[in-house]
Amino acid sequence: MRKQIPEFGGGSASGLRGAIARSLAAVEQAFPDDDACLEWLWRNRCSSDGVHAFCPGCGIIRRFRRYPTKQRRQSWTCQGCGLHIHPSSGTIFHGTRTPLRTWFFALHLAACSGDVSVSDLEQQLGVTRKVARHMKALIEGPAESGINFASPQPETALFRAVEEAAAGIAPDLV
Image (cartoon, rainbow, N blue to C red; front, side, top):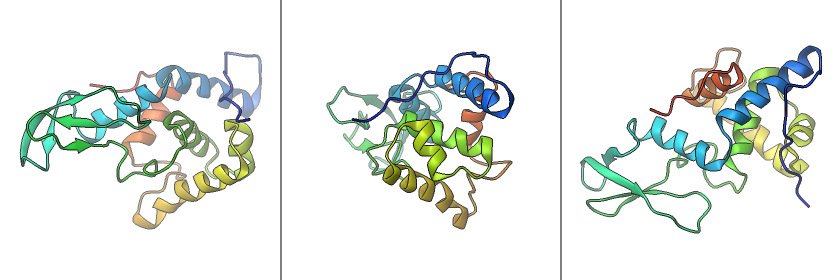
């Protein structure tokens, strides 16, 4: 049976472990579920206003709508041509069954420690060792393309959002 991501409160833990727990609580508050994570991806990768985005099918900026479906990672549909855009496409989240919220927690752990271990991911996120190994490989993999998620000063918008959430700043969804 798969464990759930633990709920972190403002406990009395001390030192780095306590700081990580408090910052995880802030990330948890900023991204309470997969829908919030997916919405963040949509607004930061495709549509700053949440409604209009460039449609590769039409070749112009069009209105998009998210229809309720049973698929886990939902898409937004162009109101002009019906093209579906998946915000997680082309990211380390693409093609994985791991919930986005778990990925956001993993990115935060990587940012806090600089080099998160497979054991840390397994224990902190409640995932299997195989999943933790896969996540670590994907988090470290983008370093080849100049994006290093484990660097002290990450340059990606997602990393900044997770870190801002840890600092108590609401994620930018506008």
